[in-house]
Length: 224
Image 1 (tube, helix red, strand yellow):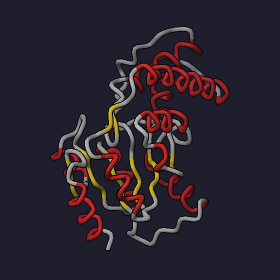
Image 2 (cartoon, one colour):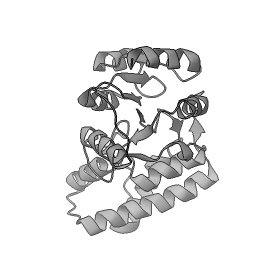
Image 3 (cartoon, helix red, strand yellow):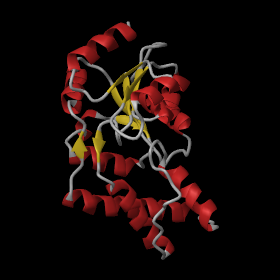
């Protein structure tokens, strides 16, 4: 099993995710908030909403939260139709070769489920992922990672101890992988460089997936 983060790990939406969140939030609350006090890198949609509520003194019930998530997804759909995401170099080839080898591919993402698949679909990666943990389920990434394992089990996918790997681009992704006892491939394609990812505990770091053969060799050795 290999579990992937999405933003910065597999693709870059050029800020569409943040803008969709801003627009969707405004549709329900009636006020546009630029969210300058929020960092989206490694964050989760539910945690971002918690931060917004704390900063603005809002009290949103679960029904309102679900409405906001739905509006965010609709805004993202429009934004990606206008400007599709850009895949990280070599990501498509890496996913295709893993899938061809029979590796179970899952998601550990801070995105709500619908937004996750909208982003993946904009670069043709949605077909690779049949299960995962998502940011509408939990605010904490470690719990999202656990949710991904539960989803895999429900799908009939069993993984032996140490038989999985997580791929992500932030120290928060690294921490989630370590929580599962998985080696982590850090992707230094965004805000965090190789030094920060290694310091967080990543087993290895790459700039992108250009060396697919090298990555597959490393995974073969790391996962036995």
